[in-house]
Image 1: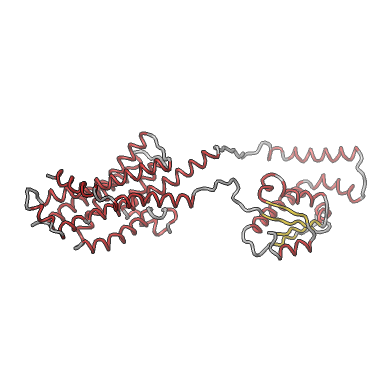
Image 2: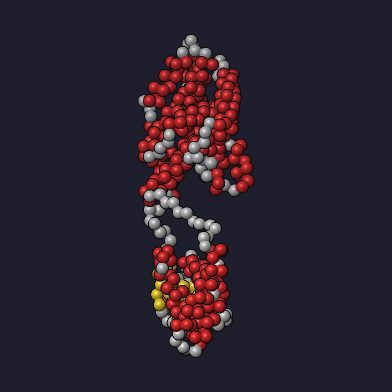
Amino acid sequence: MIGTLLRKDLIRRFYNPSGFILLVSLPLIFTFLLGSIFRPSEKENILPKVNLLIADRDSSFVSRMLGGAFGQGDLKKMFETQNVDISTGTQMIEEGKSSALLIFPDGFQDSLLHEKQTNITLIKNPSQAFSPKIAEEVIKILCEGTDRIFRIGAKPLKSFRILYDGHQRPTNPQISSMAVEINALFAGMDNYIFPPLIELKKEALKKQQQESSATQNMLTYLLAGIVVMFLLFIIDTMARDLFTESENLTLQRILTGPVSVKQFIISKQLFLFIAGLLAYCLVWMAGIALFRIRFALYQFLLFFMFSVLVIASITGIIGFFYTLVKTRIQGSAIAPVIIIVFSALGGAMIPLNALPPFLKNIAVFSPVYWCVDGLQKILIEQFGLAQLMPHIIILVSLTLLLNIAAFFMFARRFRI
């Protein structure tokens, strides 16, 4: 008899599937929209070009070297430089045509060679927020490096300064002497910089592999949360049939036959579970096809087992909730609020790491947390069965307690 009642409900939904299909499609639409918004950019360099003006009043070797650093290596990808005089550069900054103006003063190189303090000036465009700050930080690093070079190499530079001040062409012995001093300088630092104690090891995947992996993880992460939230809404919609059949006197007509209240309640609980399972499978099948989500066989088996537990626990949550309300209208008004609160706290709507600390501490009291967190750990972090035991224990407890409680409370309410 339970099978007959269950078949009745399934056939009725089969011939009126519009609402069910809409609810199933919503998780995919939300996931696709969020994934499209937050997916990594396909461009290699997402930073804006920093337009830097350089006014070199010193025109020395050192000032040209520092100005030329912005056109080398990675800095060349970030900066566009232009040599101007101070008046032109200032006017361009005022007109908002550039990010910053770097000014090397007269005697810049002489001051460094004579170990005297000197200043360079950076005029920033106040109408821009990030580009002038980028220029400022890079220039600070270059200044710090130049200062260390001149301090560490003070001895060989002193010999060069004597020749520089006398405007003399260095002789071969003088060049040899400076070379020996430079070699001695590097020999003294040999134990500190050769070989370096820390090396940066770069390993890069192919661009397509990186983008594919990042997009897959992100969409999987989003879908795992969104599908649980909409599963609550789907089962909530189906659960209202309990009140609909009572209001339309269908329940009374069914119970006049060889059907008990307990059989009727069990058929409804099974219907909620099967409807939720069907919706859940349709969403993930579409997600796997559209978003190319892939996982190993063991991971899939663990995912399926955990998903069945998730659906059973949500069936118990919704079923128990409707035992506490008096009418269908009351339930339809309160249920969405509770679902949204549970979903927000449990990480289905907002990632847990984006929540304030005090909300993270109470997230464990939301049953949605144990569902969403478990799915994400299986699919993304590839947790095993032992690591998921806390989640499984919590969900098994919720499934048994709430479904059993809902069964007896509904049986008592609909007893004729």
